[in-house]
Image (cartoon, rainbow, N blue to C red; front, side):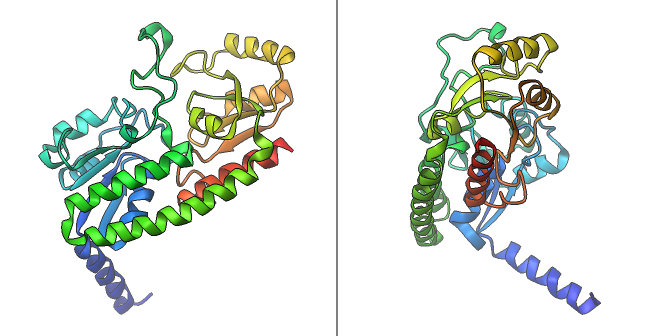
Amino acid sequence: MNLRHLLCVALVGFGLQAHAALKVVACEPEWAALATELGGDQLQVSSATTALQDPHRIEARPSLIARVRNADLLVCTGMELETGWLPVLLQQSGNAKVAPGAAGFFEAGRFVTALDVPARLDRSDGDVHAAGNPHIQLDPRNIALVAKALAERLAQLDAANARVYQERHAAFAARWADALRRWEQQAAPLKGLSVVVHHKNMSYLSNWLGLREVGTLEPKPGLEPSAGHLGALKAQLAKQPAKLVVRAAYQDPRAAQWLSEQARIPAVVLPFTVGGNEQAKDLFGLFDSTLSLLLAAAR
């Protein structure tokens, strides 16, 4: 690559960046992908986390603080998912435009029906979220609800390009509805499938597909799998078998692999979010890959 070509690439990149009307920081990759679908070149989008990171726990790095300081819109799940790191980012960025309550602060969890809302809050129950299970992105019907709300927020923040966001949302919604019909037809054989999950982060996927979660590798939410709990789970599966053990790409594979070998059931690694594997390059790929992996393992 010669110097002229490098300069051209740099100028094109600078041009796109300068053209962006809004700077968007997403807390999780799925919201970065959704913002890109809705805003295209009108947005400069980045994600605070990757698919290979636990979204409950990341470090508030100086580079991340700088991105939030310059953001026009912060798109997070909410529902206490980012409680361990987002308050630090907001405080140290000092950006009032994206502070809670401001138009630039968007919580996706506000636009869906929460699952696993606890009847009580007690630390002895592990890391339980008062607002319910925050891993809402694994039900594509939730993505549709959040997309509508996010498109409206983008139009509010950038009125000059409101029509662009409305048109892009309409196109996305039509493609998403077609894909949803296809996914639900493909997923019919999965209904009633019994699975063990690593953490209670597949609840929305299970609810959508009709999977039966018969156990978790974690003894309580947020607690690492222990030898005693895994032994009890193995004994439980001898009486109440499961077909698969499922974990997200970011989670430690050892407990799932141990149970897979002991119970002689497949261990399945799902992308969990955009970027979790090669196929999950966007939101459509996320669900294409998730269903493909589950259907292949369940045969």
